[in-house]
Image (cartoon, rainbow, N blue to C red):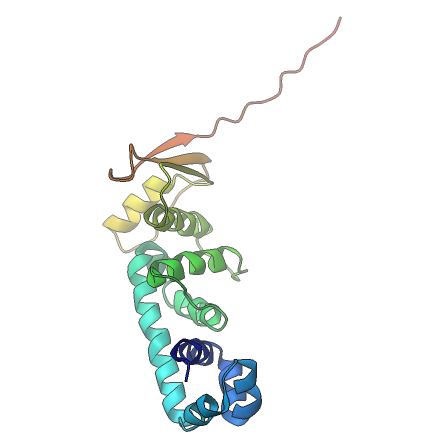
Length: 206
């Protein structure tokens, strides 16, 4: 048996609920699509539906716990909605690489930003998600400089969220936040600059 092949197959089975149901219903056909041989299919088909579903559920909740820790402000603003979004995301996304939890959280922020959430309140939620996404990316790359644009005074929002359990009120105020460090060994710093709306100059020709 190929341990890597079996592990990859199990990862997909535990992540994708439809694939999991198909495998439990017809392990021979689905097993071949997962590049499993006859012995591997026979071994995995011995797993009961209850065992597979319980383990898949425990993995999702473990990932959700890591997501909440890595995205504390997004979790605070979204509340129970974060759980719903994560379970949608987890149906088709599986973290890869050495920094699985970090990569999982970054991919989840991209999923949130690309998902239409009905009745979004507050609408500065997107800025909070983008801000935490940038910090996670800062931890995961070797760059010395990064930047992003926000529609609200994101630093003020974050200070309010960290100091209180209620959603602060804020007006739109476009700004650019720059993350920088002197070298990969130094800590990150960030600077927020307002976006100046320059109006075009109209010239009158006499």
